[in-house]
Image 1 (spheres, chains in turn yellow, orange):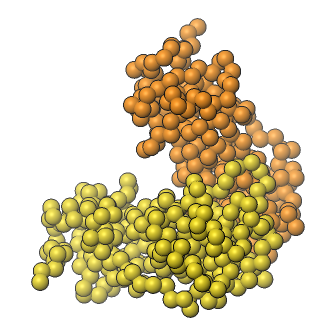
Image 2 (image 1 turned 120 degrees about the vertical axis):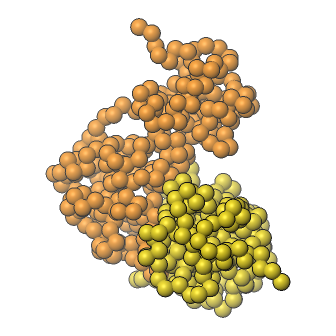
Image 3 (image 1 turned 30 degrees about the vertical axis):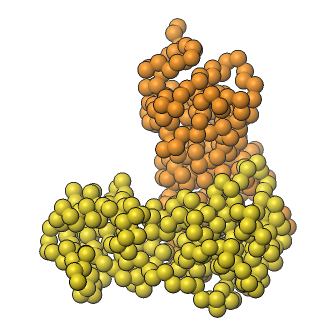
Length: 261
Length: 261
């Protein structure tokens, strides 16, 4: 049986078909088909190399190769020039090195992983940068898992991966039909709403789910029915709403503050 | 003396020179030259109409005109079609209505406006979306002023304006040489640093400046010398840093929490 990706084992120069294969991974359809996604920049790539993710191949300007740790034999390293990197990069300003990474198996989040932890639940977040920033923030505050509704933006979108700044290598992201998944959770279910209980008076306790909604619509009506503790970040000024990644961060910090006390 | 912008007083259809004038405002150079910037979307435009900003002209699809309040006589309203709007819009998906707005006079922030308030100070923030999100968050928490270093991204960048979601109509943004401006402030000067005092133990008090730095480099060394109270958002997990707009929001929320007590 022929490995569809065997061409990456050719040496030294990128063939036209390699270039077009990597470029195809800018699109969701081909990421899904191949099971691969793009990570760029030496810092992020080093974090993925040091994670359970499997690296497929690396495409590096000469001067970035010395910054890599020792690579296992199954990771193919290609030296590229600036023109080649410009073609395969998803960035306006490429960062010298690009990796193709195998996406993680679509496993289920174990119920016991929810106990004694806080888990973020995203209902329809659309902006890839917002999702990436939420993953980075979750990683800072030690939240290990994020559960996304099926209509949340794809986590392997290059803008999402970029915004995580390597944190995607550590935070596990799951996609679930929330109306099914949220049933029988036996945990406090906090939800960020414009009309909830003042966050500064909220008793977070030591475990729970924290639901954040879509940028324009907030949390969908059906998902709202699962909320046991509606939470509002108190407004002092006049802005109509907060960006969803900002709301997530403020809530993560408040939970973290409570655990620190 | 001929008004350079008198062509906008022509009726009904956009001339080629109007189209190219509005398109030129996508660039900083021409925004500076004309003193005009672009605001898009009915919600944001309504907030600017209800603010001290002066609206120069409006370009609207027919169906958005009924959503506008009564306009003063000096604001010219042009009906445009989708093709025209596509040409002048800065957005991938135009939002039906676009305004040209006069930028605010470059006044100085009065020293007394600092007393009894918290003021955000940005040292070299580069990403227009980050600046816009910070303005929106400041507006939510009732911070009325932001002082930016001269190398901070331009506040009238269309991506910044968009990310403020109308909050730019309320929050005043000033540009200063921080090394001069920060002298003799006689206020606590908090600075977000990776190695400061734990934020949860910080005594914010009731007034002060809060400095946030560049996305990659943080607060510059010279500006750091003005910090009286270095503050760190405690890290629980493994991310190397937080996005600057996220840090700003977490700090604003913590200050707000302290004032609420």
